[in-house]
Amino acid sequence: MRQLIRIAVEMWRAVKFELLPTFGSLLTIFLAMILPGIVWVASKNLSRAESELRKNLVMNVFLTGELSSSRADSLKNQFLRIGGVTGAGYVSRDDALSRMKARFGGEILEGLDENPLPSSFELRVTEAVLEPRAARALVTRLKAFPEVDDVVFAGELLSRLGKVLRSVKMLGYALALLVAFTAIFIVANTVRVAIADRRKTVEIMQLVGATRGYILTPFVLLGGLLGLVGAVISVFALAEISGYISRSFVLIKFLMPHEIVAFILTGLLLGMLGAVVARENI
Amino acid sequence: MLTLENVSKHYGHRQAALTDISFSVGKGELMFLTGASGAGKSTLLRLLYLEEKPSSGAITLGPFNLSTITKEQIPILRRHVGVIFQDFRLIPERTAAENVALALEVVGKGRREIRRKTDDALRLVGIWHKRNNYPHQLSGGEAQRVAVARAMVNDPLVILADEPTGNLDEQNSRDLLALLRDLNLSGATIIVATHQVGLAREFGRRILHLLSGTLQGESR
Image (cartoon, rainbow over all chains, first blue to last red; front, side, top):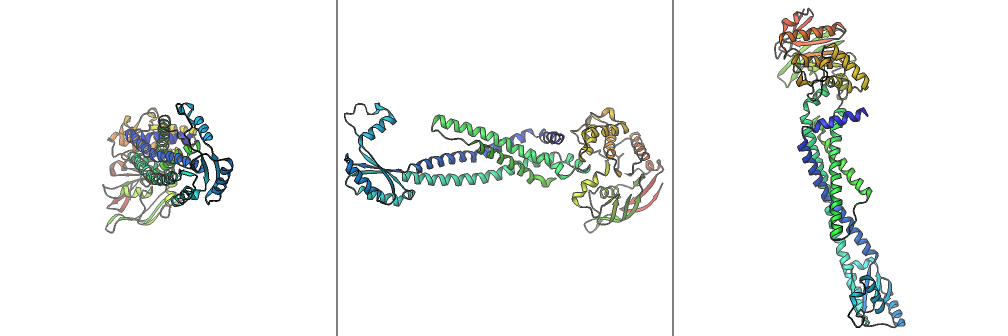
């Protein structure tokens, strides 16, 4: 306990004449950490969207007209024999209408004399069909059936989403690396200034027999504290940004508690590392 | 207790700060080291608290062999050496008592022991009433007394004083040297480096004379 108080006092002494530069460092760390934070939240949400889409990978095959039950069964079996198709379900015009009413409410179709929706098949397909060439081949094959009017597949969108996701992740890694170096550099400089400011004190401590660890500990913890506080402020700012996007545009998921802890611990470690880099001054 | 054998210190090839210095200091001795500015007094003391290492020769201080000591052992040695400087070297943001306590804190003493020993040391040097003052609130003589208290609070093997009276007026200089003599009378081993030979002679103790880094002899 006595040691902790001693370290806290030394930390305060190290920054009390350097409050403005310390605040500046904190602000820079916060700004540096918020960027990968945003990328993290974005990539997390894109991943979630992609996995949702993958789970419900469906190809909509719209038909020219309503089929009898036996014809629907026969067509279903033909579809199932095609490579890449793992499941097929017939959606009659009435089913389609019920679904639309359930989803958007009955008012949307008010004023129409008859049901405008076509009957269709919903085909579940393998992930291999995500490959654009495979998707195009399947669509062509399906369109060859005389009963088929049109085929709509979100696979291309998913494929594009996958590419975006990979790019976002790469950007995230690059930013994280950049931020790691930036944070270490900023903290190292702040601690260097703090050590230089207290050069006389450090020399006197060495003179009376203080070990390097004794002298360095407050500075390393100061670095850790800068990183930690910078990360905490970033988390609050990220939560605010996520909340705003959720309220105004689209519902997005924020970081889980263990991810927040990991984010803050990363700030702490980067800060401590920065101080360790500055230690050659002692 | 302290022995130097053929100790030399060179900076580069040409500049010899100390050449072939040999002498011993017994336990409980008060010794003066005199010489003009640049004679090598401060360099010699720096070798004793390992601010620098000798270029050649052997130094032993109590159980420590200063020629072979490792970097990690230097803090341990310094806990057994009290040093007093001309410019006091007190930490400005610590009070007089906190400056003295620092020497005990770094060796890991308990809070009560630190308090007791700090108070004892400050009483001994006659500055206890100013224990809560910061260095800038102390006169030169008072600040140097705090430095003396810090140097002796750990019962070191030796106290090294490098021109301790350099920033003091004549009366304060005499008072400070008298204080060091009193400490010596109570058992402390002390080496005082000073260019004031006359002042040193008043104490009737051993005086080593340095000239251009060489030992010229000794007197009383």
